[in-house]
Length: 456
Image (cartoon, rainbow, N blue to C red; front, side, top):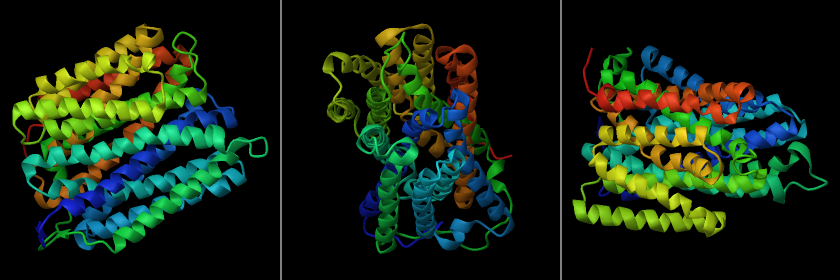
């Protein structure tokens, strides 16, 4: 890779971070759309999870098209540059948001799914371009730290989205004159405008260029790297578990033996689930950095507590309830210490803890069961950045091709929620959580052995 190196990458990283925030925000709104459209169109659990299927299967299709291009005509990003790829992604996502207006106008569930797929095609380009771009903006050994920082702002978007989306869709725009699917029209026009505005800003902002040099080989060389091959399935199962839990969390919180919440009340607790991912990612950015040990753990504790109170203020949940989350934060902090700032070791330990919390949610009831499931967000936090940086390590000029393959496997977010929805309809919501439980077994394998580099 070659680049025209600027004096500092700080401003470039700040611009890219805004992208992570936006796609986190719009993705997490699916957790609100799933129960909302379930009610509007009177869907089963399985049918409601088609929202996530449409969204995340589009990731697979978009990434597959990108990969085919890379082995036939050459890597598209290596030819046009990361910035142009980002602009294309923003414009596509903006168009998808605008399509929500006619979808609501015609009261068509299929039209909604098409609009979601369009948004997802745009986010596919953003993911393929922005993730390796962040990894390239600095020293390779601190790539995981930078991605955790960017993913932290991604999680800020996912934390705010359920609160804002729940308020706008379930309350503010849902009036006697504006019933059914109509309440999503104005919110998604606003979100589409935000994507388009961000595209205009990035068009005129300077970003360093990273392009391939010399001949671009038209073959699937990235697949020869063992760490990438196994990393693809790690992405599949990680995204699948996170989306499965997030999209079915409202249904879980509405259960009589858990909390009996309304949709609006449950949406605030979804914000705590994603808030946990934000807290863990900001703590992970510090944990995987080169800061000295004592200062590192003091800073992590300060960041964690500060962000807890931020989420607490955003959600306005009573502290007599929210304090349970502090228990899981303490466990998460210990898990970071056990991880010793090693990406593979940390994700392995986090997977073990996530499985334990799922068992509590499957067989427990009441507040402990509820907060255990919400607390999984803390342990999902570092998964994406750690898997991604471990998987693309050593790919060199095939980094973009490898990135497209990793983003392709986000399709796990389409498959696993459907499977969980089917189990929820058959055996109940509690036992449907065995789907993410078994998925974490693969993440343990990847953290122990799958990440090790070897070229076939």
